[in-house]
Image (tube, rainbow, N blue to C red; front, side):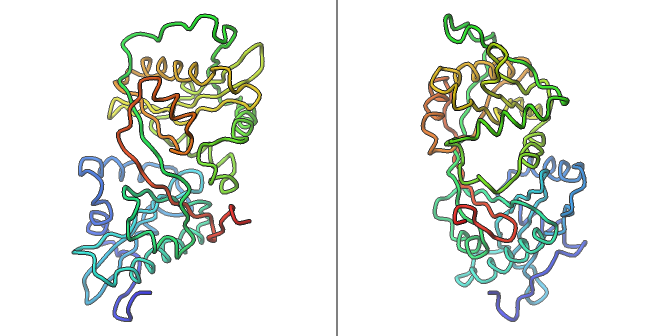
Length: 317
């Protein structure tokens, strides 16, 4: 824990700018303003925008800070503790205390899941997260490719009867049923099973980029839903994101995955995007091979830690 001379507390109003600049130091400067604007413009959550902006103070100076950034779907993004100067040898106690205070704020606001992303597989701050109920669920690989200038070529004799129907809000229950089916035996971040309910998951999907229901699709064959594709637009960066795609267990092994990617490319063209991007669990080798075969290339990796409310680990239940 933190030393007796260190105080862990919520940042005062006069300290918020300094504390946020410290916490967001890993983020490119040009990306910080849009992120804070998005947080301020989001629908109110029980966890207020800066309720969990925590600082470690010693001798009247801010030593370190962390932030649990509220997100739609009763979620929060934890920004790992950052130090105002070189990380000291005894940093772990302060970091653990900061993370503990952030998780307490999340629990009090009924946040269902907090998530943290790291670039390094051996970040020393992992210890503070693990001491407070976080566990690693995945290593994400970010892939992308240039969007084509024309529609993908038709694939003859491949699922000729398959059509893509745009989602409409009155079809909410239909979408939930289909998503639940595509999650069965999925290899995509299985560690998330049991942490969030479908309503919270969908709220998170809708909050990705600029949401347009017309860029979500049912993959239908002879009136039967076989798959789903959820896309998001990021107009500020001219990117389209493949947020989620899934196929029902009964329809797997028929090449539907490649048809879904083709539809994602079509949607990217319609959005006017220059690039299509996706994040995939590296353990989901079938999906990785599919994306690579579709011309995508890896450009970044992140290690994902999550914490359920109260620190419970569903994998140990």
